[in-house]
Image (cartoon, rainbow, N blue to C red):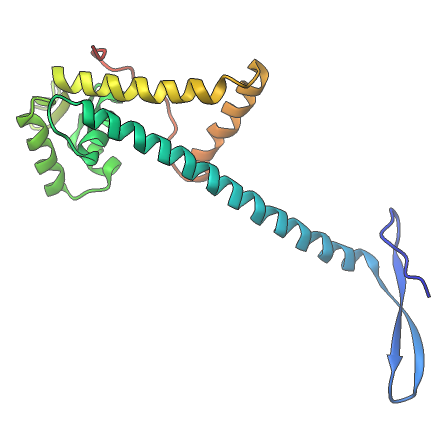
Length: 203
């Protein structure tokens, strides 16, 4: 007997079962919708895994490129800096002025480590500490002149990368891509609110 293949309004298909005890072939009806539903689910899962692996590959490429940009910024810096110092400069530069608590949360480091980090950056004249106008017990951290130069170089490198990524897309495709990418922080529980404009522009 020929088994029916998947079709629109198929409620059931016939399958053959061989009974060894009675040495007969039995014909039985079964729910095709459930069977094909499971088949579709397995196919969907396979496709999902392929998409996830492809996304991972793309993210790795972007991270590698971003790391290369960071290394170039570090190499060109007047004052020697390391990767965590560069991340701090980027974070501060995007916001103009930040509290230590915000920096600790953003970098995922201990308060003592953050204090040591800022001490190093202050000594290199990359950042400066200022008292909060509303509460002088609160210390704000902002970029110094050299820090603005490092941040400007880092920002330009990242903007160049974004231009390269978008240059082969149409205007409509760019809007769609940015919209899709804008949903990722929400899926990862990351704050995606636009950062406040820096109080002083990088030179």
